[in-house]
Image 1 (cartoon, rainbow, N blue to C red):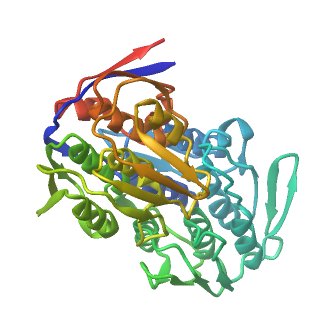
Image 2: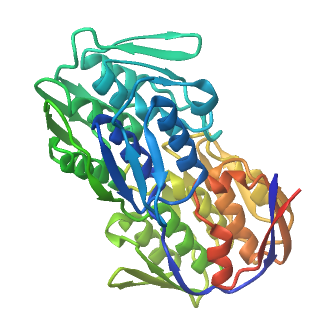
Length: 422
């Protein structure tokens, strides 16, 4: 198992290229199931989660090859084993996004209930409700979702809202299934995240007929077949936000490439209010901080609100603000396992229900800490960059799920991170 040893404090400076979006790449890779032949997906980062879905597609019968750099070639000419086995699916929640395409392509699917980060309950009932509305017959058996479409998929008006807002993976599943359904499907309360928009544009390249892209109402006119496509995915806005916070927490100056500021308005607004300067460039931005950090109140919300995937990183940043801040988690109310670890580094955080009260401190102090999930890992890395002394972060395999060579990118900016196997 690997650990990070991080010496701080440091001041980051330089340029960094943001990798392609993991959360866009995964459903787009699954979408290749819908079209016999070879699809090409460009800008795919080399991550543990990508490797899991690559393995899963191979188990279904597809052939996946990585070309030069960030290119993936997915030959879905043969999908003859529509089963998502437990040993693969348990590793990553996003594995559930094969369910919709398998039903549309094969007429049946058997997919294990998914695993993933321990950030609270994330049921798939909305996915199943939407697929049932399209005509699927579904039951659970021995931990597996068993789904069939004896009469084919048929277009339907479907409401996908849930107790915590729209569902991103649920929208992706229903959207992909609906492209090959007979008739017209309307998805109301669809997720509006840029990753769903990117998926919809890719599906239209494949011959789908999707309207309302980027809005909470998607209208899909079903087609008889789809064709392979060549698609380049968008930059990862969560990675971009993480590097923005890295520049801010170290009072540095970092230029981000392949960063779509238009997808990050809530993040940019909060950073500006905290005292961080963001200067737009042709393909990204320059992030810098010279003065003190001011406190803020943040509530996570579905897009275009503040993203839950940056909550932990901003908590590390606000731990050093001059005053009291409040972060309220409305998407995954249990996503606060990083609080205890940040407190080990001399932060002053107190959990109150779905909120954390942050009393800013003058400095953070290095300590041995344990990563509990993907974004918590990033928060601990950020805190360690600003902390005095050498921080040891255990279980960094979590961070490898969502950040491509994060230690190499940060070290190129002036960080002092060493990866070791223990």
